[in-house]
Image 1: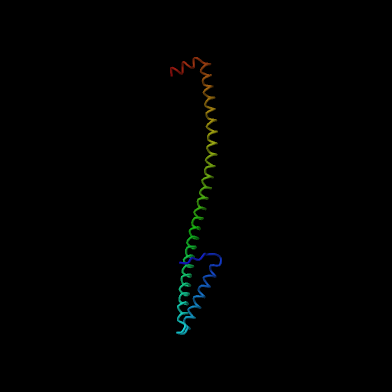
Image 2: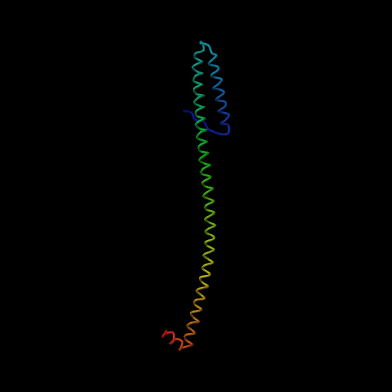
Length: 136
């Protein structure tokens, strides 16, 4: 089985094969009985032309299929990249939120330690308050 490489001139090859096939068929129609040997050769050429045409059509079909698959993969890649961008943006937002809330938590802890220190100082300064709180 013969294989034909595809390329920028593949379309012109198809036309030439079709023209050759058409001309060969016309020649066979007009030949005389004395040209039987030439007829066999022409039939062989016609068969080869048909095989070449079938090979070209097969390759073209494979090319079309691969182009569709490539397009689908590129679309999928673009969707994946968009999702990555979305997730990176969300991650950045969450990171900022964590930083903000951690700072607020540190402020609250600092305020809590300050209030506890003030409370302990108050208790140490007023022994009667301690006895009242213990009874209550």
